[in-house]
Image (cartoon, rainbow, N blue to C red; front, side, top):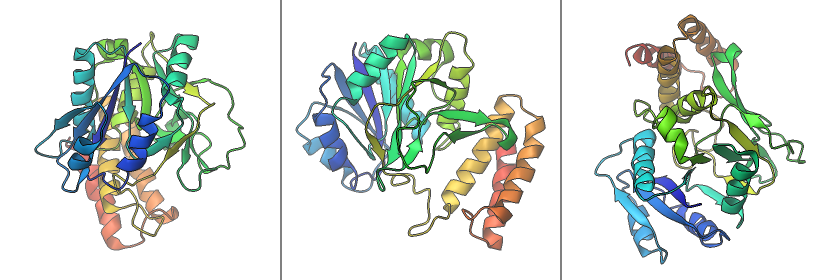
Length: 295
């Protein structure tokens, strides 16, 4: 089974060295890697070109967003007769058997999508993702099971889940035939939410969580979702996440939840420590919500 590994770079020079090493160590060799660069201004492209490893490079003249860039890589992989597509962030570090374990899991359960357990890069014993689901009480916001828990192998069943982040998601080519590509309306954030929602609601497909794997994610290093040296969400994250959540609900005909979402995000501003408590942030949440209604 041939795997097409699709990874999107955007000013990724700080994380690429570790990513290269993880790829080089893989014990599964029937794959090709496709880098899609979204007009990086740093040394990312030069580092990729200098990497003494077989690779494909798609270089964009502008930042097209994560969904559009992933679609470019997916199309390239399908055209090159790949049986599976692996969407994979380059701000990750993983064990040498990642690819072989993902393929074996897909074959064992006859499933069309597999996502591994993912821990934070630091601290590495803390879980970031151990399966994912949609929460109707949060306007169908996806959530990560086990997030921020110390990893004591408490999620040791390879069960069926509803959601998986696209930072590491193996997909059979049949998925794209049945549900299509990623929705490019999402510049960043909610692109994988929308994709997994469509996937998990299709009768012929399921997403399987793989527990027995070492995988570490350098959270927010590429998209800058956090303000440096704080736990606060960045303005960019707040804007993109809020308006895309609105668009997601509109797209999937969840009209009742649009008002519910407005109440929810407004209350979160006052309650959650993730939001800077200032008038500028409050206005950003409100304007982003109404921008989403116009998408």
